Image (cartoon, rainbow, N blue to C red; front, top):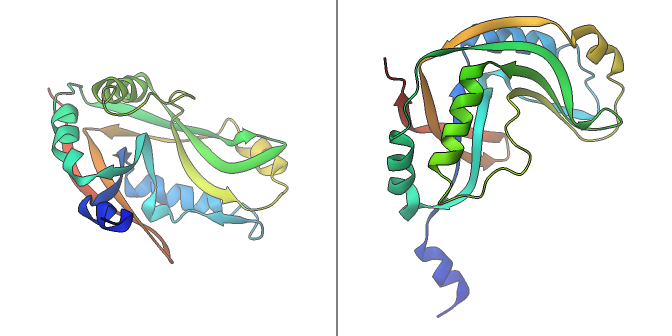
Length: 188
């Protein structure tokens, strides 16, 4: 039996758990992106923006029901998310990602509950949770100190969260395409 035949027996899906972002926030992030340089980076389509709670990666389809069951046991109340400030990963003198910050006790709490619910199936994130909206991925060195200084403490708004999503990502030539696999509503 060939290795390729063996692989074909297991269908995989690229999955992540996320909080969706309302259109008005996506629109504001699109306006913010216009202030970034046009060269040296790839801006994220505001329509695709979300807050990733946990990236699962390539997952065998046979695990899907177990993942849904674990996520379905998570209990949380509706909460607010603040969008404030901008920053970079990993550091300012070596920029790979430009982001807008997201935060709030409810968001961090939900991320921790997701981590715990999936602990037996997926390793814990080494870096811990850092809520953000990705604005751009940097391809080569760019000058954005002025952009960071201007928007570092800026308030971009707040929105309510009443559910989280299990999402599938399909990578294509035109960028990723996301689809909702399952929704998990808040209680209360």
